[in-house]
Image (cartoon, rainbow, N blue to C red; front, side, top):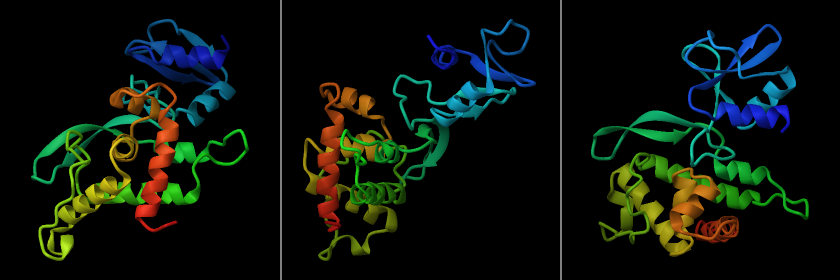
Length: 227
């Protein structure tokens, strides 16, 4: 196992963290520097860890590896945030502080050398996410977003409060995408799940999420009249 892979493996263990001593970088275990380091790495390996998945400052000094969580993956830097739900109550939730799975996929290329997601699909995903955030629903992960959007006035959501109108737009968009695909958008675009985590949550076969996500984004872009 090369030093980078070994460092990643060790840093995903409970209480493991990265320390710096001069030009040396040390992987440590435990709350302080009294224990002997688990591994010594050079600056190039530390820089590789910083690029992906990233390093987060540690309150006691040093850094921890971002995204060490069972649902973590590329672009998943998990942390805690306090949100205010539409009913006015506050809650502490796990959020993704890093690059979104959509942005990560947009940078990846297929065997033909072209990006897996085109700019229109990325823009559609961002628009859906914007409405989700305007709805103030970041912590309401149990909400049934696939429920049909219901107009509360004869002219649709125009007279609803901003958060209510945003929720209406999200539900309407997901309804147009349709069942079987809309759920993938909920997991990846709204909840920030990595593809592997979305597949597990939806009971899908491994490595099928990417194709389903792309088809869902194509339908979403059509809903927004981007294509």
